[in-house]
Structure formats: C-alpha cells, structure tokens
Length: 239
Ligand code: SAM
Image 1 (cartoon, protein in one colour):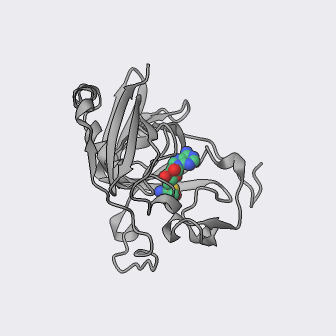
Image 2 (tube, rainbow, N blue to C red):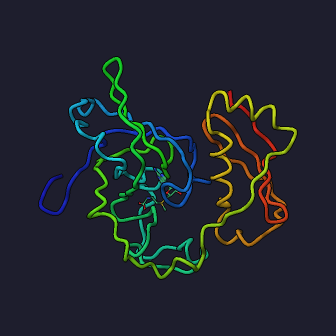
Image 3 (cartoon, rainbow, N blue to C red):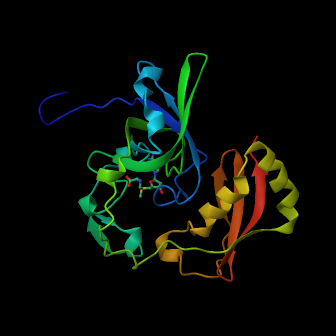
C-alpha cells in the first residue's frame, strides 16, 4: 500500500553479525567492537549506490527489528535504563517494540568489499542480531548529527554495568584456537559480558547460581557471575 500515510518498505540489505540471538547484544552501538558485514539484496547490489561512502568514518544504519515485529507494540514499555520495571512511553524510549519496528544505529565505516559481482559493506560496533534487514544507510554527519550540548536525565539511573571478565584456565587452549578463526574474539566476549547481559532486574545479584549461555559466531559461550565478576567457563564450537 502506498497512500500519503501508509508506506511499504523493502530491505536493501541484510547484516551478518556475531550475535546469533538477542540476548547479550549491547544496548546500543559501539559498546563492543562487533563487526557487521552488510550484503546487498538483488536490485540494490550495485557499487554505484556506495560511491563516495569512503568519505565518512561513521554511518547510520536504519533497520527493522525483525525478530520482534510480529509481537506488535504497546504505548508504554519497561525501560532497562530505569532498572527494568518502571515504564516509559514507547516514543520516549529506544525500545525494540515500536509502531513501525524501525531501529537506527551509528556504526564505524570499515569500507566496501566487492568481488564476484557481490557488493558488501563492512562496519563495526553493531548492536544487531545476525540477519537483521536494513532499509537504509546514510552517512553520519557530525556537524548536524552530533549535539555536544544534548542532555539525558536518565544517564545515571541504571548505567551500563562494567564487570570484570575472566576466562577459566581450562578453556585457555580453546580460546587460543578460536582467536585464530575469529580475531578479537576474547576482546568481543569481554566487552559483551562486562555489560552484564542478564535482565535488568537480575543485574544486582552478585553471586548467581545460574550458568548463562550465549552464541557468538559459531561458539557457544558459557559464563557465570560470581563475586560480582564474570567468569567464562565453557567455549563450545557448534558444528
Ligand atoms: N541502536 C538501535 C536503536 O536505538 O534503534 C537499537 C537499540 S535496541 C535497545 C538494541 C537491542 O535490540 C539489542 O540489545 C538487541 O537485543 C535488540 N535487537 C537487535 N537486533 C534486533 C532485531 N533484528 N530484531 C529484534 N531485536 C533486535
């Protein structure tokens, strides 16, 4: 449908990321150096669409929260920034459950790769689940997009945790092997887990009984929270 107030969108690309599920993805971009590889759909797979993009260090990705879109939206949402229980208006939040399911993230531009007729754009700092559809890409223009005087009164209420992260001695050889395949893997795991991916209402628990699991790339990562620090206890290569 395409009247003056109803539009349909088409994905121009999808982005491959290390994050195989929503759990443990940072709350916003650039909180971990996670790489995204954007592959253009037929009809948009044309290097001319990206001509001049090398002039910009950062880009806006506009995307669809495709894993939540079928669940619809509500006028108020629980805000992780307020500890998880207090609610805010959906339009006063960066919730993934939005009227049109549109997300926006600023990421680093790592350049265009083109081979065998397929154009790809590499970015860094994504907060997106693997396979997220993009509906637009735009340059980040600092003179207009950066507002140094901007204020955010919620900044201090529930700041992003910064926990120590260590790897059990028993998994050090596996970690070294994984690093050969996924360079920067331990730094990525450290950045992601230091933010304490547990739900906001659990983040105050400093000794958690549970072992949590997250898949990054093709690696199943098991971790625990003990004495307020994160310990990675298992790394399993998924076949
Ligand atoms: N920076 C974007 C924004 O403000 O529009 C996204 C912020 S949103 C709070 C970030 C969270 O979205 C991530 O932690 C992840 O759990 C979730 N997410 C990422 N990609 C998604 C997708 N394709 N579908 C549904 N949820 C997604």
